[in-house]
Amino acid sequence: MRTRWALLLGIMTITYGCASAPAGGPGPGVNITGNWVGKWEYRNVERGSGDMRGTFTQNGRAVSGNFDVTGPVVNHVAIISGAVSGNDVVLTEPSTGRLTVNGTGNEMTGLVDGLLDDALKITLRKQ
Image 1: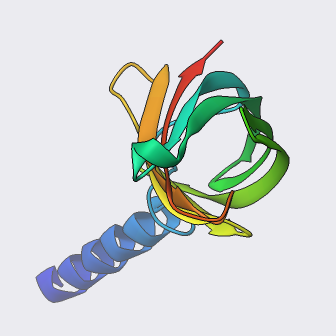
Image 2 (image 1 turned 180 degrees about the vertical axis):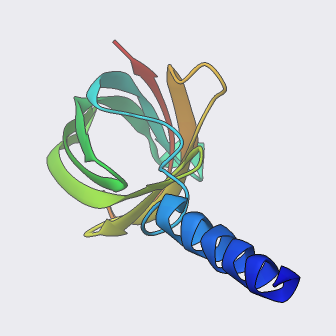
Image 3 (image 1 turned 30 degrees about the horizontal axis):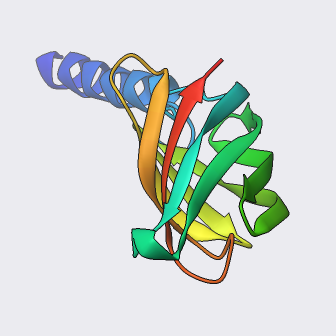
């Protein structure tokens, strides 16, 4: 009889554990939806720098954005997409790179390749 109760308790524990686990693993960590402004500069800063202004939209982990990238010789609209993982925004199309959101969620910095003709160091602040 004790064996049956132990078996039943074990099955209930496993079933409860599976039912309460979130689908797809842990949540995204941060929510970056909103307006962001900031600065960009080429990795070799002598090549140039400028401003960025745009919006991120987040749905779960999925992220999309539309940014104006401007500078002395640049006027570019960047449409980007990627995913949030913890405090990182991993960009995948058409630009690649990683932006890390600070602890308060109001600033992100990182390197992005594919917005212009070389990798950019980017700092954005939430508005």
